[in-house]
Length: 115
Image 1 (cartoon, rainbow, N blue to C red):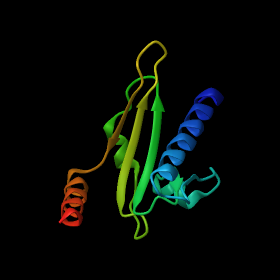
Image 2 (spheres, one colour):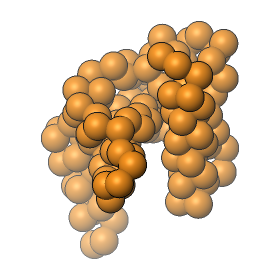
Image 3 (cartoon, helix red, strand yellow):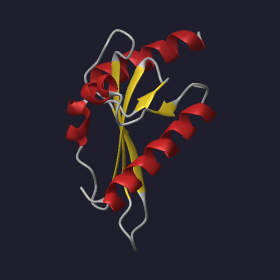
Image 4 (cartoon, rainbow, N blue to C red):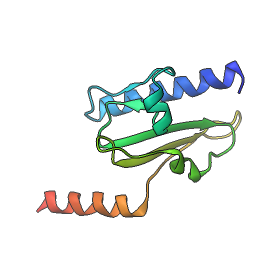
């Protein structure tokens, strides 16, 4: 992977961390590459509990299989892949990918809290 691609990826990780801060995770941040535990877990961000976040930004649409790179832990039990297509000349596309079982759990919790 070239320097330009690494920089693009790091910038997107910071962008996603900022999104999480705005949404109520004040400690969300991109972890540094030498923090091997997080890297081995497939997480790009810290401070997003319970979500184990992997962020991908590619010119072509990233594969949903990126979620399979994320290992869960007790602290980060819900894997979430945030994917962005950013090809020059095309409208950017961003999606969030999670396992259906986790999505069902999230919907159940939302419905319960709305009662």
